[in-house]
Length: 68
Image (spheres, rainbow, N blue to C red):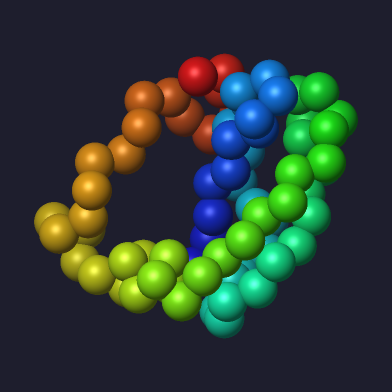
């Protein structure tokens, strides 16, 4: 699984540049405001990512690297 995270400070969206295969927590530096983001990936997140795209919830507006 790969994640897209949104900065809570500035709203900048960016992709996490590493594969995520198990539940874990890690930090990412925001490319928009240089703040530190805590990313938490749970077992439920991984199960949701494994479902076919037709059964997933709709995605939020905006693309990777764009403000929302």
